[in-house]
Image 1 (spheres, one colour):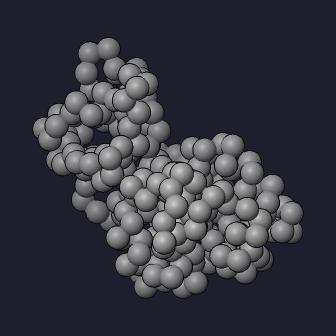
Image 2: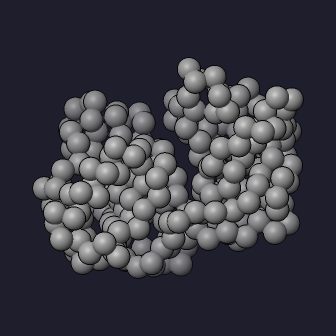
Length: 223
C-alpha cells in the first residue's frame, strides 16, 4: 500500500478542532483495530510531510476513516487538511502501531489519543464482545469529547469522562489520579490501554505502577 493516493469521499468536523476524513480504500490496506498509517497531503510542497493517523473504521469496511485533531496555529499538515474537500487526494503509506486488543480492561485516553480505541471499541461492539471494558477519557472541556454520543451508546456507564478546564454537573473535574483510576477502572489485574500526550502517559503509567498493575498488562502508544 506504500505511497498510495486515495480520494477523499467525505470531510467534516466531528468537534470544533477534530476532522473526520473518509477516503477510498486501496488494495492491500489490511490493518488491526488500533493501528495507524502515515498520511501525506497530495499537494506541491507537502508530499514529504507525513504524519501518523489512526484508522477509526473497521478492517472490513470498504473505505478508510480517520479522526484527526487540527492545529491551525502550527501551520503544518493538520492545518493544510482544513483546506481540503471531497475529491481531493491524500497519500497513505505503510501500516503500523503498537496498540491492539489483548483482553478485557480499562482504556485511558487523553484528547486525540482516543483515536486508536475507536476502531477497537467499534470492532468489539460489532462482535458483541464489549464485556466489562471501560473507557476513561480526559479532555479539557465538554466540547472536546470526540464521539461522545457513540461512546455513550456503546459503553453506557463504562464511559467515564474527566475534564481539566470545565466544571459540569455530569462529568468529573481535574486530572486523572491514582484514586480516580482505582475508583473507575476494571480489575487492577486486567489490561490497561493508554494513549495520549506523553506527559499524561508518563503520569498515568506511574500511577498504575503505584497501584501494582503488572507491566505486561499495560499496553501503550505515545501520541
